[in-house]
Image 1 (tube, rainbow, N blue to C red):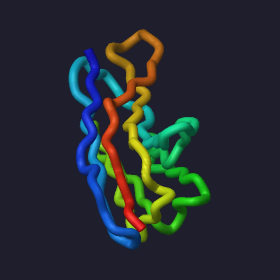
Image 2: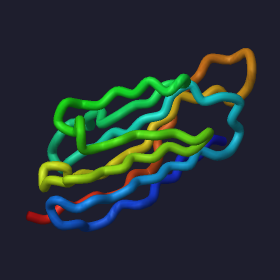
Image 3: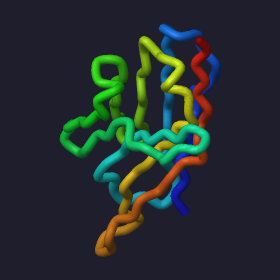
Length: 119
């Protein structure tokens, strides 16, 4: 009963900027962490950035200084700047969510949004 919906993807020139958004909705008791992953054709899905309750953030080395993750309740954002062709991928939103008190949390995924960076 939990849904994560991403938006904000598109086609941009190298050096440009893009802001991704993700909204979690449905039966939600609490969200302990949210993050962004990406997957390019023929490659493994990889972690881009995460943000934990309390505000602690983590980024993969290749995006440090260029990407910023932020969270507002059930929404998570990824501000991307100085984009490079190698950033081209489908970007997926992820969240660790409890749907009710007294149960373990589970991970949920959005449907993905395409980001294409041209040379």
